[in-house]
Figure 1 (cartoon, helix red, strand yellow):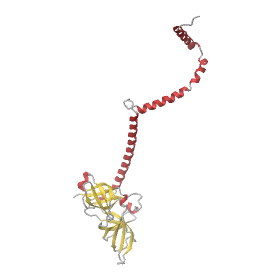
Figure 2 (cartoon, one colour):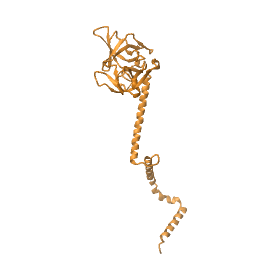
Figure 3 (cartoon, one colour):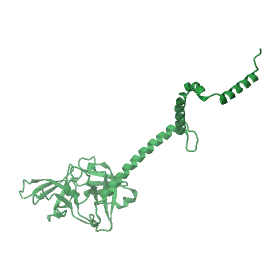
Length: 298
C-alpha cells in the first residue's frame, strides 16, 4: 500500500478539519485549548507595554522619536514645570507689592503729580561707617530718580517690630532717601545712617484709630546699628506712650508718614528735664526686598 502524495495528504487533512468543525461538539474540544489560555495574560501585558512605549516615542505629527529626543523632551518638561512655579511665585510677589502700595491711600495724595517707582534692592553697604543700600533703576524711570527723594518700604506681616498701632495708620513707612544716582543703580541713605538728619514729630494712635500728633518739633538722626535717636526731647514721650515717629509733609513728601517707633527713653545726665529717645524702624533694612521711591513732579 502506497502512502498518499503531499497534495493528497493536504486534501485529506483539510476534509478532516472541515468535518470536525461542523460535526464535533465544542464541549468535546475545549479541554485541548485550556492549557494555552493563560498565555493571553502575558500577551496582554506585552501589548500594554508596547502601546505605552509607542505613545512615549511618537511625536504629535505621528513621527517616531529617538531615545535622545525623548530624553530632551523630559528635560524640557521639567524646565517648564520649574518656570510655572517661578511665575507663580512672581505673581504672588507682585500681588504682595500691589497690596503694599495700597498703604498710600488716595485721600493721602493731595499732589496729582505724585508717582511711585518700585525698585528692587540689589545690595547693602559694606562700609561700617555708613548705612545704605543700592536699588536697581529701570531705564524708563532713570530720569525721574533724583537725589533727596524719599524712599518707602512696606511693613512685613509678622515682623517682630510690627505693632497693632502701626497697622492702623498705613502700610508703608519711610526707609530713607536717595543720596546718589548712577546709570542703573541708586543709593538709598537709610534713616539709621549717622549722617541722616531730619525734622520729625511724635504722636500716638487713639482708640478710635485717629492719630494724635504732638506740637513739639524734634530732630531725628541716625545712630548706626539700624537705630536712630532723638536728642534732648523736652519730655518723656516714651513714658507718655507717644511713640509714633512721623515725618511731616513737605515739598518731597506730600503726606505725613512714619519713620519708626520710640523703643526706649533715657534721661540726660546734663539736663534732668530732657530725654534721649531711641527709635527703631518698623522693619530692619535687611528684610526689605523692594522699595518705593516717591517722585513728585513740579
